[in-house]
Every structure is written in structure tokens, then in C-alpha cells.
Length: 149
Image (cartoon, rainbow, N blue to C red; front, side, top):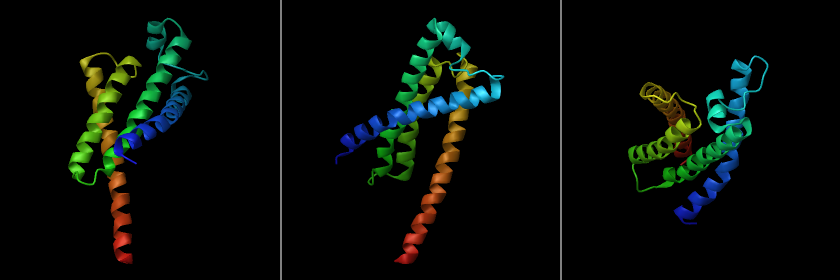
């Protein structure tokens, strides 16, 4: 299968995953900050959208977009003629260019330079941690495969 079709297929499969993760995040946030109430979306988003249901529809669509971008972007890791640095840089760029606007529109971040800088810093930190864990896992798998040879 060519890379574009693979990216499209994975992107479509990533939509429900993004929605599910978005819902799980609302459950976690509700458990921590909700004082026994379910927080379906940020109060600022609800106010901006005019109703809770409108805010949830927007947030669900944005979560689907995030799932689609991360899943479709996974094809980047299969570009065998690219260096690991190039793969990492392009995947980071793709995901950051989706996450930052989504965070802005969903009001997951404060709408200020400081808020965006903090959100970006957190995104970079999480990206580095996940990348490092994946790198160590794959390095171990490769080591085991080489030992079998």
C-alpha cells in the first residue's frame, strides 16, 4: 500500500481513538477538579460557544482531528530513507501544528503568549518523554533481533 493511502487509512482509524482519549481526559479532569461533577468542557469554551452541547461538539471534532493527525503522522516513522532526526523533526512539526491550534480553539490553554508558551513547553516535554521511551523499547527489540541472528 502506498504511504498516502496508509496515512489516510490510519488517520480515519485515529478519529475514534482521538475522541476516546478526549473523553478520558474529561473524566480525569472531572475527577481531579470537578468536585463530584462531570466537566464536559472548559467553562470558557462553553461560554464562547453559547451552550454546553455546542462546546462538546466542537471539542469532540477537535479531539477527532488530533487523533487523525497523530495516527496519519505515524507513517513518517516508516520512511526508511529518512534519518531518525528527520523523522522526529517532521513528526514533531506535524503534531505540534495540529495540537497548538486545537488547544487554542478548545480553550485547553490560556489565550495569551504565556499560555501558549506553557502549553508548548508541556507538549515538548511529553513528546520527549514518549519519544525516549519508544526509542529505548525499539533499541531493546533490535538488540534481541541481532542476538538471534
